[in-house]
Amino acid sequence: MRALRVLAIAIVGFVVLALGLDLYAGLRQPEVGGPECVLRTVDEAGRIHETRLALVDDDGTLWVQSGHHFRGWYERIQSNPDVELVRGGETRAYRAVPLDTPEARAHLRALLMERLGPVRFYAIRTFLLFAEIKPVRLDPR
Image (tube, rainbow, N blue to C red; front, side, top):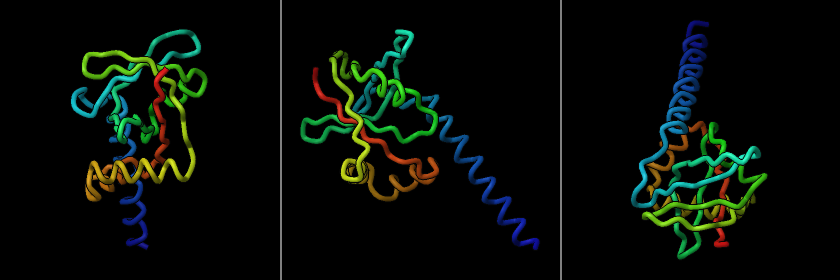
């Protein structure tokens, strides 16, 4: 009985730690530079929101991914897919195309695995409680 209680406390502790780290990562945002960018989205009230994201360049096709539980930009692009991407001091208009298919998830997962390496990829995914990767392709407008 004691071992079961210790195991339950450890599991709850891990979940609380992972959710706390996920919230911190979602609020802090990565630094802009290199493969990072700022994605500008517009909510239903017309307010502009800026979110720093890691950008994946797949031979000219640009991808971003929602992999955090606490990101609002993914919900905003569902109702308004017209976005702007700020990268390298330049702002360009794109149409965000969510591709929530097994093929798109596998493709982006492979790109991220190549970029990060398997150890770092799985460490990040573990602390995000394996939140589902939601790929979004950015098509120029």
